[in-house]
Length: 112
Image 1: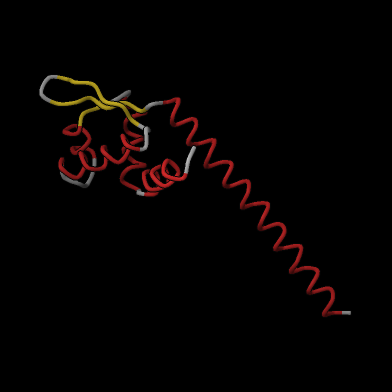
Image 2: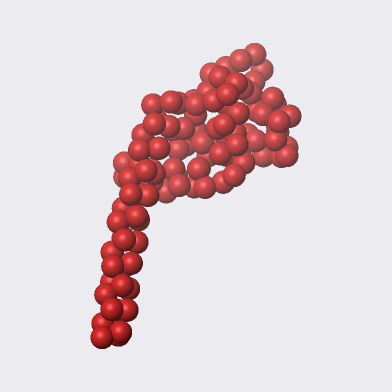
């Protein structure tokens, strides 16, 4: 993934409303903006904007459904996103372990 995709992904999953939308779409197997707005504390227009962010990040795809669009999670893209986020978490864990070792070394040196 390139930096622009990374930024869009982080922006998309960084918002609690969008994470809740992804949960609802996964549980329900898809939904419309109208239906999602009935389940969330935001307007239909806000839901549509949030869906646009998720769409640009590749996390959802839409198909026409009458006068609306039906949104579903792109599970392959979601799996790639989870792998990327997991990789970042692993890298940060390694950094934190290095910082901890350095801090412990400094403490031992000061006690000597």
